Length: 146
Image 1 (cartoon, rainbow, N blue to C red):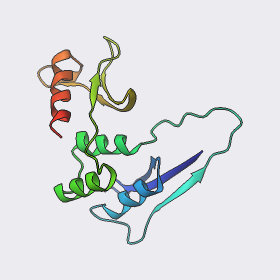
Image 2: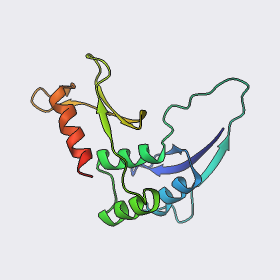
Image 3: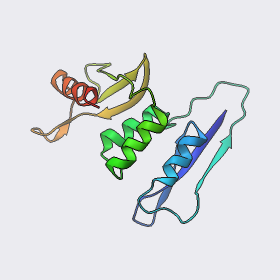
Image 4: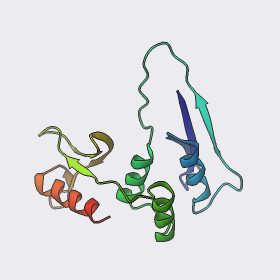
C-alpha cells in the first residue's frame, strides 16, 4: 500500500503530515498552499504487511474536497474551481449525507455508497455537539448546491 503525504503548516510553529491517496493530490495541495514551504514538502510512504491495513485519516480526492469545502479552508475561489476542473472534469460528485446512529455526533458523507468524510454536528442554540435530521438536510442541501 502506498500513502502520499503533504506537510501542513499550522501557523503556530507546528506542522503535521496530511495523508492522501495519490501523488497528484499531494502535489496539488503543496502547490496551492497560501504560504508554501519554498520547496515541495510532499512524498510517499510504502507500507508492506501480510495482513490487511486500515489507515485512519487517509484522504481520498473526494474526502479532500469535502475537507476543504466543509472546513471553509479553500485559499480562494480560483483554487476551488481549478481543483474541480482538475479532479472532477465531469462535474462534482453527488453527495449523500447520512446519520448512522441516533446518538452519533457526526454526519457521514457518502458518494456511490462509500463514506468519504464525517462532519461533526454543532447545535448553535445549545452550544454543544449534536446532530439532527434538520441539520442533515441542511448539510445535504449545502452539498447539493456545489
